[in-house]
Image 1: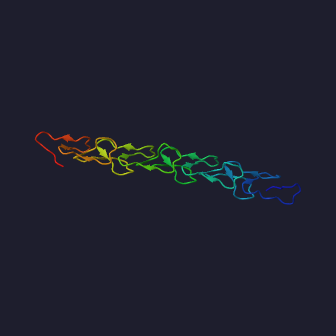
Image 2 (image 1 turned 180 degrees about the horizontal axis):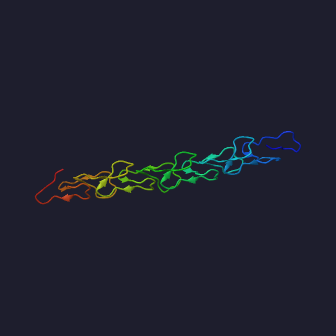
Image 3 (image 1 turned 30 degrees about the vertical axis):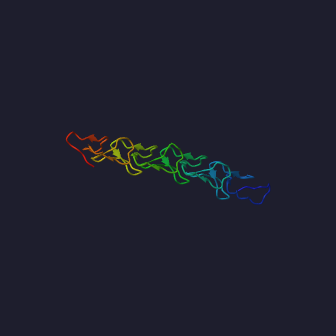
Amino acid sequence: KYAGITGSKACILCDTGSANNFTRQTECQPCLQGEYQDVSGQALCQLCPQGTISTSTGRKVCQDCSVGRFQALAGKLVCDACVRGRFQPQEGQSACDSCNVGTFVPGDDAAAACFPCDAGEFQNDTAATACHLCEPGTFQAQQQQSVCDDCETGRNALNYGFSACARCASGRYASKIKTIACDACAKGSYQFL
């Protein structure tokens, strides 16, 4: 409360966005940056809670951190960006989440979502910034996977990043799983598709 005029018979309540913690005052003080007050007649302003900020004085409410950003501490002026491999899809949050296996966040900070690994790729770690290509002799037919599968006998994958294994051509065979290149049939033998 404050008295706006000398000799006043009554004190006036401080407006929202301000407070007065002293006696004999003629005005209320606006809440500082990082603070707010949503109730009139208060002695103190409140710190903006986690997940919110206040960048100007005299605030009645705090601003939520936007998607891809967070604030872990109360009374702050700036929201922090989620680092690579982490994301935040909601406003007003105090932390970021790690991407699950099979997903990643590319080079950008402040991500709102993780992206799935493509077919022919995998990611077996959380909070990843990229996916790995399946090694030769392996494949992955689906998106968002944490492992690659071995090529079955009779099939091969020559290079990295295969989404399916190829059948060995006529006159060639693969007697083991995870074959990179099919072997030629020996003289006197054949392989027909």
